[in-house]
Every structure is written in structure tokens, then in C-alpha cells.
Length: 232
Ligand SMILES: Nc1ncnc2c1ncn2[C@@H]1O[C@H](COP(=O)(O)OP(=O)(O)OP(=O)(O)O)[C@@H](O)[C@H]1O
Image 1 (tube, rainbow, N blue to C red):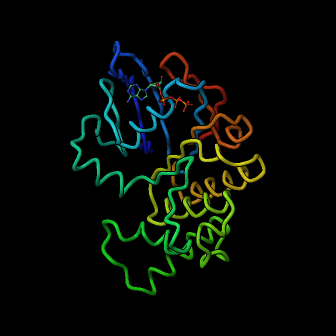
Image 2: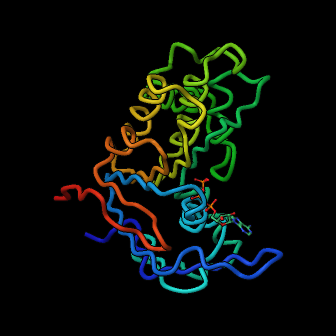
Image 3: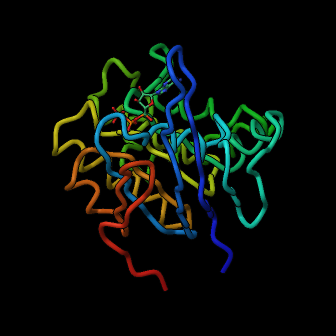
């Protein structure tokens, strides 16, 4: 089966004000549909940089990036923007919810972009199904200030899933939450893989990482497998 994502020998050097710094120096990663991978690594090891390359916010300096078998290593920004909204869902440590909108309206915002406006009834059903998937359909009418951190993050996950992305990228999604609440958020992220979505989780938390099928560690610019999942 063609992998969803295949990175081969990806390299990235960051050029700030000082000397250029090599952050990624030969990253290989394969992700299949329905598979979940956790990326561990010390602070500053380049985890967010790698996620931004995978999510097409940035491009690598070298190596190859195949998405569903297509070479997108040097995809121009216009097509990258389309791929970002059609193929990827994003979840960050901060929830980025609009405070004056309800949970359902926040999720519905993701449907506005690109796909055209769905008929009202279909839109409502799609939004409610996404909230249901992450276990918070009963909170659909609540606005973010009335929700706990974990509930807000689950709204953000529903928003990321509502357009059925092929890949869900989560960068420290439990970073602002306590362990128990974080575990509920990990459950919600995992619900993405039920329907074949691939999940990449960047985390510092070993317990959360161990809930993924595979655990890799970013060290000295390369990904080293810590625990190999079983892929059929
Ligand atoms: N735009 C940039 N210009 C220059 N250096 C950068 C830039 N972005 C990140 N860096 C540096 O690159 C290195 C990798 O950063 P990155 O955020 O990818 O690491 P990380 O593993 O995600 O860290 P953390 O766990 O603390 O979030 C860091 O040393 C960071 O300071």
C-alpha cells in the first residue's frame, strides 16, 4: 500500500541572525493510513520544525517528501495552501478558538474554507458528528470561556477533523493540560485513526507517546525508532 507520507533523508538548516544551524540532517519517516506515530525529543531538537515541513508551512533544503506517492518536496506555496486545507488537520498547544462563537460554530468555521458553503442541515450534522467523535456533542452550544482546557482542546480537535483530513498533526496538544485531561485529549486524537487518518503527535509526555502505535525520537537531526508498531 502506498504510504500517506514518506520522508527520505530530509534536511533543514535554519538561518537566523547568527550562523546557519542544521536542525534536520537526514530524517526518514513513513506513515500509513490509520497509523499513529509519536515524536519525542529534547527541547530545541527540531520537532516543531519537522512538523512544519510535514504540514507544508515550510520546505526542506534537501531530501524527498512524498504525500500519497506524489512528490511535494518543492511544492509552490499556492498548491501547498490547498494541500494544507484539503489533506491536513492541525492541533496546537494553544486552542485558537474564537471566544464569542459556540463550540459548534468554531468547528463550523473549518467548513467555510475551500469547500463552499454546505446546506445548513448537512453542515449541522457534519459539525455534530465531529463533536460526537471527540465526546463533547453535549457541549455544542457552549462558548469557550465556559469550557475547561481539555474540552476546548477537544473542540479544536473536532475542528481539525471535520473536513476528514488524511493526516492529523498535533504539536504538544496536551502541553497546557494536566495528565488526566491530557489523556482524554489523546483519546480524541486517536479517534482520528479509526477512519484511516494518519496521526503524528509531538509530545514530551512518555505516557501519551506510548499510546501511539509507534514512537520515534528526534536526536542529532535524525529520527530514531524507540518502539516499533505493528503495521499489517
Ligand atoms: N525561524 C527560526 N529561525 C532560527 N532558528 C529557529 C527558528 N525556528 C526555530 N529555530 C531554532 O531551531 C531549533 C529547533 O526548534 P524547534 O521549535 O523545531 O524545536 P522543538 O524540538 O520543537 O522544541 P520544543 O520542544 O522546545 O518546542 C531551536 O534551537 C530553535 O531555537
